[in-house]
Length: 258
Image (cartoon, rainbow, N blue to C red; front, side):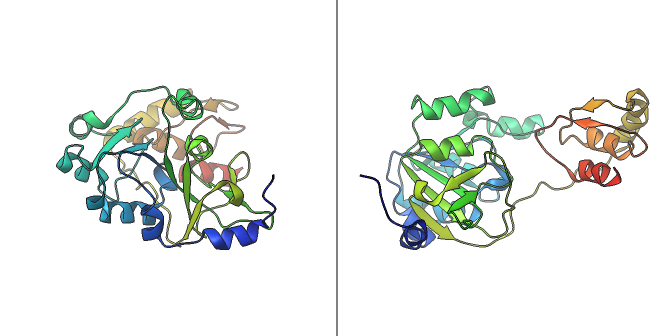
């Protein structure tokens, strides 16, 4: 029999503190954490503060900015409290990557949602971040949907941090109040990548590469400093297309110029 509870009443019933929500996690479970800018920081901080209560937790994530040092806790505990499985560590110096090598599971990104949905990599808990619900009970995952939506649909227990500062993004970014188990309301600034410092080498690459980009070209751009510098030099180009997994300030400045 279908649940006839009005979603707004259900939302109120599901609201709780972060400590109560994290307290539902059990030893030995696999916990997914929303990626990058979508990381539910308040929930992750609480998880770190309560780490002494857990044993043998596996943290699954795509990418983290490590504002809360779960890797340090995992390294110190040697898997007794936390172990981390990351599918991507980001662009970093080799020394930084080597320090976290034991936490990486190399995998094609498109394969990850299928692993969750088929339970080949079952998720017991998903910690995600979303916008407040609209008039129909739909919450947007905002700026970081990636594998998070698949994780939210696949996890046994879904804990959502509702953050009014998360932008509402259209497309397949929504999850309904009825599809989450616990709600923690916490407003805070969402995470953002720091600006990449310009360098002499980036400037030289920019001057050389910009000559080869013609009107009507389609560009693929990453967060690399040289590539972002190239964008800044394209203000006189026309009809450019962008194929990218990220939208940076430089891209938006070109868009604003038309």
